[in-house]
Length: 302
Image (cartoon, rainbow, N blue to C red; front, side, top):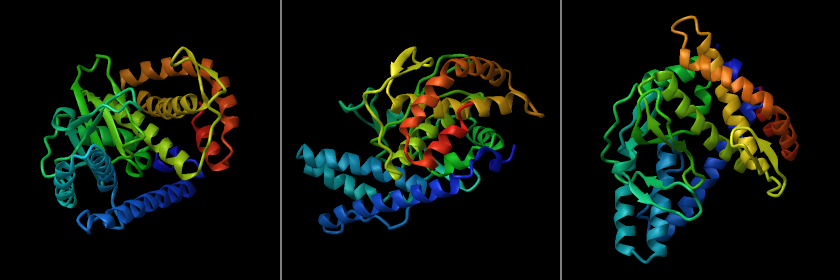
């Protein structure tokens, strides 16, 4: 499958909106940084890795200033200068990402989120957990979803090393655009699944923000993934992420070279779940007024 086959026609327009959002956010940080006597220097153009790291530092600096830890804030400002030289790992051709273990990050427990934030504030150091990163990137690329990664994902924070059959944990948080938090496995197809799943969530968060999507927080629809009634935001996130993964699994289940037994099982399970979820997701889609965003989501309602 080529990349173009996985991308709906509205993608170029949405990619432009994402770039505009990124430029706007960088401009906001540059304006705020000017108040720090020019010590927090943010270039006008950042790649995905720098953009994600910018949010780690602005989150940490803001918290330090709010808590009157001014020495910590000054130290963070000085450390930010090393971000330009921060090392990366080639996840996809021409797209390096920061891959850093959670236990080497600064942990922040934010009441707004159910999961902790792990902040990569030591850009001059990087201990890369052993995993088939490039093979996972290739699995994503072969299924046609490399654009979803290169457009948004810049930092991968790894949590636990798991056996390939173990249950894994992963998540993404609005506070840190471009960052995903995942457990690590050695099966490239399954590692690619974890990367793609959370990248889909952070991508959709960025698309909603870029296109000004507002959803009714009161309306509820049944989600077979959570076995509960959920608002449109949660259900559409699940529908998009699992819709993307369904196509990913179907590709690797039938791949000419090295078909994945894991992908075949997940595709079968996913098909059954979609039979239960399709009506709810389509109903929730009526909440999305932006036709481009609705079209993107509709493309992955299997």
